[in-house]
Structure formats: C-alpha cells, structure tokens
Length: 504
Image (cartoon, rainbow, N blue to C red; front, top):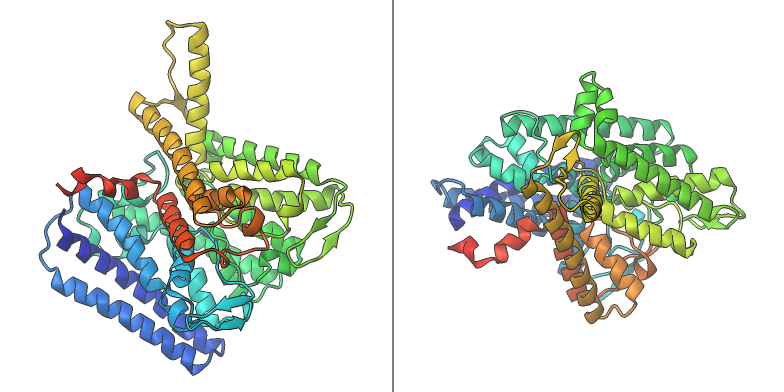
C-alpha cells in the first residue's frame, strides 16, 4: 500500500471540503450571524485548507494509483471529510466530538440521522435548550451542504474539478459511484463526472425555484433542496417538512425525491431529448411499480384513521386525499432513503410500519443518490429466484438472467447475490451490536441499523420520525457512523481494507 499516495489524494479531497465550507461564511454574514460564528467558520476553513496544503506538499512525487490505493483513498477520504467537516459543529455549536462526527458522517453519506434535538448536549457538560431552527445560519447551511456534496459523491466532484486526481480516476470512480452496473457516460471519467454533476445542479436549481414559488424562504428552500436531491433528509426545522403544513411543498419535495431516487443517466438522456429512455429502462419501471404499489397499500391502511403531522396537527378520520398525501410522501421518502417526514409514522398501523421497513432495504435505483440495495439488485435477485424455481421443474434447462434485454454474465449475477447476502448479514451484525451497546428495544435497534446501513435516517421506535439519535451512547453512535459509511460506499470498498492481502 502506497500510503504517501493515499495521503496526497485525501489531501486533495480536503481542498474541495475546505472550499465548500468557505461558502458558509458569506451566507452567515448575509443572514446576520454573530461575528463569533463567522470567525469560527473562518478558523475551520483555515485549518482544513492548511492541513490539505501540508499534505500535498509533503507527498509530492508519491507515485501511481493501483487498485488497493483506490479503495483506501475513497474510504479514508470520506472519513477525513467527516472529521474536518465536523469542525463547525464542534467549534461553533460546542457539540461533543462524537456527536459532531456522527452529524457530519450522516450528512456526507446522505443518511439524515441527527443528534440535534431540543436539548443540545455541549462538550463542557452543560445543556443548551435550542432546536435545529435556532442554530446559526452558517452551521445550518454547512449541515445541508454536507448532504449536497455527498449526494453525487465527494470523489466524483473532485474528479470533475481537480485534474490532479485524473491518474487512476477509473478506480476511484468505480469505488464510489453507487450501483451494480456500469453507467459511465463517456470514455473519460472526468467528463462523466461533469455530466452527472451538471444534471445534479440543474435539478437542484429547479427545485429551489419551485419551493421559493410555494412561499418557502430562499434559505430554507436551498437547504431542503440539498436534502432532497441528495436523498439525505436534513431539514432546517425540528419537525422536518411537516412544519410547513403545505400540500404544494409536500408534492414538490416528493416529486424531486422520486427523481433523485432514479438513475441520473436517465435524466441526462431525457434532457438530451430522449424521454422514452425512462420507459425502456427495466429498473425504472420496477421502481415506479414498487412506489405505486406501496403508496396504495399505505393509503388503504390510513383510510379512516387519525393522522398526526410532525408539527402536531391532527387529521381525524382521514379521507382518501389526505391519506394519499401522507402515504405518497412517506413511501417516496423511505424508498429513496431521503428521510424527510410529514407525519408521525410510529402511530400508523403495524402493517404500514413493516412495509416501510421493507422499503428501507430496497432503496433507490443504481446511479441515483439513494442508498439501500438498489432496485436493480433486487430485480436481479427476484429473477434468479424465479430461474431456480423453473429449474426445479426443468432440471436440464439453460436459463439466462436478463436486464434491459441484455444477458447478465454469471459473474455479475453471483456478485449481486453475494452483495445481497452480505448486506443482510451486516444488517444482522449491526442490529446485534447496537443491542449489546444499550439499545434494548429490538424495534429501535433493528430499524436504527437498517436506517444507518441503508442511509435512510429515521427509523421506528425511539429513532422514529419525531425522534433523534441524541440519547444513544457514544459507542453506539460511532458504530452507526461506520454503518453509514459502509452503506454509502456499498460495503466492499470499506470491507476490503480489513483483508490482509490489501497491504501486501
């Protein structure tokens, strides 16, 4: 392992983080934050850029990328981004280092799990009774920006703007971009990264404008756009999107969550005048089918029942329209692993809760900003199961697994099946580990584990729609932070670093 090369690439990634963090300074000044907040942001940016510059200077002529360095750079790059990205939370908001790290890792991995509640626990042992909306605007902005940067990928962004990462870019790109299939748009990785980020920015601007038209303040509109397009879920309000109590805002955010959960390659081709691409894509059709079926099932389950929004509004004996509104938003939010909430789903029927947990495992599409196992993998697993059933009846038959009319090689199918088993196995491991670390409620432990591993955020029980992770022990928070990282980088990129052969 060429550690000098790894350090050089990670230092280059930190430059991106430092420059992005610097954009919070004019926002804090414009929104009227105190001079202490602005000076704190300047200090955090200075430390990040200074460490990055020192790392680059100390590792000149480090050599060339190899496969093992690619995995190490991506994994350690995300960890370093979370460490330095946590500085504003620790320096300005005075959170414990593990709370600040948890919040930042949750942001960059687009998980949306938060430790910020109405009682912030300070590092000096005191408590500050303050909600999310009372935090400095600069910190809130940076909190949302961690989502936006992590949504399309820190390394992908770096490949688009830092020529110094061009060497070995193919390895870095494949180690970070989610999804089991290769959707590279152009032969050059940097060009593909620019295209993906271009579509990402265009959709972000469109959603911000639509939310602003709906009466949401510009600052809130951008912050919620960051959480939507990155399928993250951080809100500027303690009660999430439900605090606005607006059908229009619910619909706009739900539609853009749905778009963010689809493959961005399809969006690019549609913008190039080929909208038929959506219909032809088998994964997207399956994605639509799951969304519609789950929405209808939850809607039926809510009919005639009382629905309580996250801001406390009670809708008694909800009719079809009201049930459909809350069901569609929550289903899309969970399926795309965004985590925004408009209603307290813990009060819904048990069947609805179980359905939402199942959706947590599926996640978004390959090539989206969503987490989970991805629809393409689930589709391949279902086809493989059907193929084995047919082989039981016709033992000598030769059955091919096809996706988008293309035959999948046996290695690809085996890789999908292995990932499926590994994902379920890691979910069981984290559930047991969280239980050992003091979470004695099995509903809370299991839902918190899949919420972290699937990069979803809210779960059920004590980590439900109206709760946070602030009450958990430091060890549990750090373990869940690891689960977030593994889920965002799709397991293998992180787990390969524990194999001894990676260092030989």
